[in-house]
Image 1 (tube, rainbow, N blue to C red):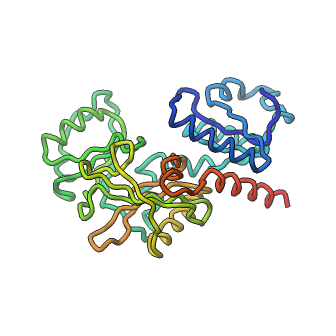
Image 2 (cartoon, rainbow, N blue to C red):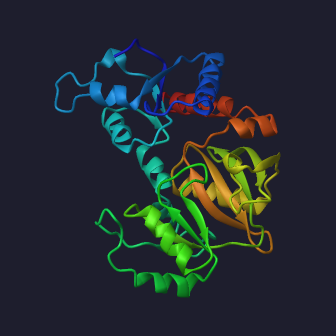
Amino acid sequence: MKKTSDAWLVVNGFIDSPKFRQLFACLEESAKRQGCTLEIQTNKQLLTELVIGAPDIFNQKDRPGFVLFWDKDIHLARLLEKLGLRLFNCADSIEMCDDKARTCLELLDQNIRMPKTIIAPKTFRMEGFPQLDFLQQAEDRLGYPMVVKECFGSFGQQVWLVSNHLELLDCLGRIKNRPFLFQEYVDAYSGHDIRIQMVGQQAAAAMHRYNDHDFRANITNGGRMEAFEPDTEQLAMARQVMEKLKLDFAGVDLLFGKDREPILCEVNSNAHFVNLQECTGVNVAEKIIKYCLNEIKFQKN
């Protein structure tokens, strides 16, 4: 293990890009300003160092005060929790958000508006489904155009808008046996959404994203952004999502219905907030670190 630190920032050791490095630097600098040393640890490093079954699996002197878990490696998150560490966000919350089907299931009984969604049946064949008769049911219930989403994906990737049966077949050919879902296309304000960055039960910042050439509003896909002030209904939905999924912080993405009513699109437990900071001028990293430190202080008291 490395030297003792106030906290760990756990990241994926197999991802290295300027966008990720910029985000991690924001968190490190914000922690430093608040008197906290935030030390980066990678999942590939920790999982090979923490030997399950070994009597010295975790040296107490190496224990951080808390863990800012900026990855989706659920096994590592659960292992660290088993070792008594406080994670922001916790393993359960990360898992519920990472799997889009699981998100829908967890929020099913919460009276939260979501697009009509059909979770695709599981197939064990590597090449995909040997029978495709179930597609007719999805087509009959949702019609075209239809959104197809892989359950695991980020930045608007692994999301398709299909207009007919042939396009749907082509889409399934690319997905193969990976889990996915069929979803109603919300066309009232296509290419528009809202990202509300929540920290606890408070909206730290929000932006309106829009794309004139793609139904996905993500900035990565060429979308543009502007600062946005969520209304009472949008904030209420974001808070309800945070409470149900037991999240410490998250990016809650909302669509507009035909009367501009909020419709939940998805929830990102470790949302990239650098674009949001640049758009709004709000230091989201500062708010996240402050929240974590306050929670740890509260626990000790």
